Image (cartoon, rainbow, N blue to C red; front, top):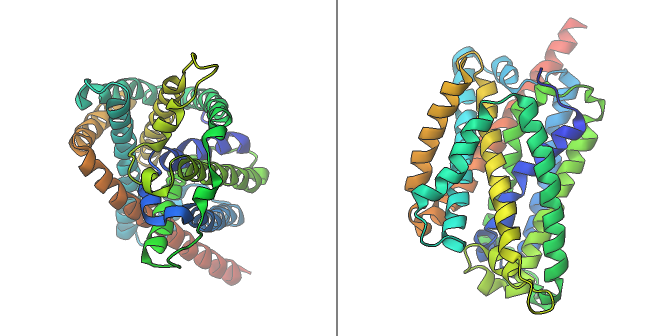
Length: 361
């Protein structure tokens, strides 16, 4: 039986929510410059308020099934359309996961390995994990995220000496302009990956502490995101960091112990591969639970889903310039499909619930 505790849900939030900001922070730094960390804080506050509101509505209405919330909020035809649009956002997030994972490994580690081959390292094992029981995914997520947090601690510890915090100045040199606002919106779009986990809420048991652990998970995501942006800017400067596709890779390459031990590449591969892999699987699993009545055979679903995702990810990532242009648009799309759409739906659903409660009393 698929069961989650509130603490387990925290692991899923962390797994899907900060990897984008940590992997390709250059997209955001190009817009925010030295003040990207400030944009991350502002976006983080909005994100935490959004998370709290979603869980608040679920607890007040005692409904944690997002598909049921869509059905009770809109007329049947519209509910099917909006559920499909939300699922489309999850699928686009799968493509993001596969594309970035394949491109980062191809461009940073195995340059001579073609993209189509690099993508198979994610698609094949992910297809297998999608067919397994939910408890298997839960165990893999907990173990992997624990190892990833350990890896990140090591990275920050050994790269601290290379950071220059005067690179964070000046703050808002051009004031609050359209680039800074766009930076906030893109970061919010990255944070909206948390919506990937909403279809899993219905499996949470003992929901009395769900708000607490959801906010803790959100705080961890925001803290790691701020630290990632600050680390990139203080290591390279905002101009240089904005022109590196994957700043963290170059940052970890500086790690040396006594001048003869280098292990930065290993840390980068382990973190990047694991988190993008799990984000892809969680997206696919969430879509499966949204349409559980339609997809009755998990193996067939996993194979067809992975083939379509593989083809899309290949065409997106075979040109790195195209990929990073698509990522900018993806975050804006994610802000709408995975951020605004659920938020508006939950607002309408809560208003209707309050009205129905008043009429029955």
